[in-house]
Length: 391
Image (cartoon, rainbow, N blue to C red; front, side, top):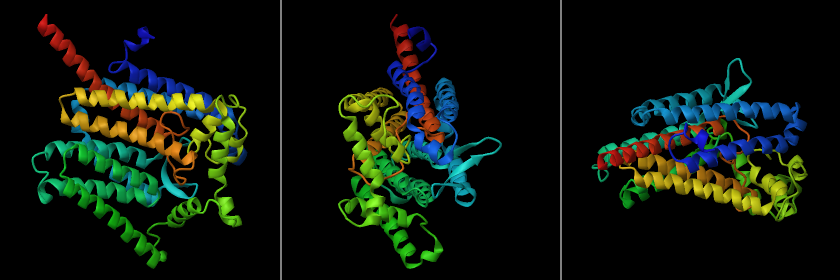
């Protein structure tokens, strides 16, 4: 392992965890796709090969980005932000609809899709971090300090919320956490949070009042998910059918017990429409058991710890903010998937980073780790330089 790790700069623990998860995802994707085969046709091997392509692309992106000079990440922040807006606008008008949501851009000439919000999340984290550094002495001023932070968050979240409420809400809360870490005064932070909630409530009110405008096309889906969660014990047939996914996910966890049913031997994955993504954790527990699920959660916590360690060691505030934003995002996404599968949260569209089947989500998670490793590589250089100076 050391022979190969010498080509990978940065934090070796992060490399090991990330590569381990991505490799393991090949096993689980092959095992978790029976319902996809049943609905869309094809074979498990076909989906495995498709996922393998994304794994290779993700690793290539991660490796390439970690080799570049980290100063370019800050310089590209503004360009990435405007590119994210362009991709989101393109998705709004020309996006490909999958499962009732137009979140995807179909890549020409190949049968692959890209979810623009996955790129937008990272772009916003990097851009907000850059503004926090530039405006650090003006955070008490609404016009000079706070408004330049509010506008990018509102624009990106506003473009995402139309087809993906859970991602927009998660990203908004993540940005609020990032502003808190960046020492934005609590009063202004509270006002911004309240303003975001008020804007969301206004959008819902306008949609309910003028439904023909189609402002929130997935509003009924969000409403049903919430009300079905609250009425989980209802005897109504429609409500019971709507709750079937969540109930099957909880049953899969129960059936998995301590040691699981074994790789490929899970049965309830055939009744979970997103067993390989949105309900990944439930299927994982069914086949691998609670002990492996606890180990999986531990891996995510170790990953977050190593990222926080990098954030605290660096002397560059920009690198600290970006690192913490990425670390919190990855752990939050994994936690939401677990909470949905266990019935704590209503059904959302958040999958498990590095493990679930998916293209853009996996690639952008790898890009995020590449950014972290670029920062960690700088710490190695500084350490080597200090050692040389002492010698």
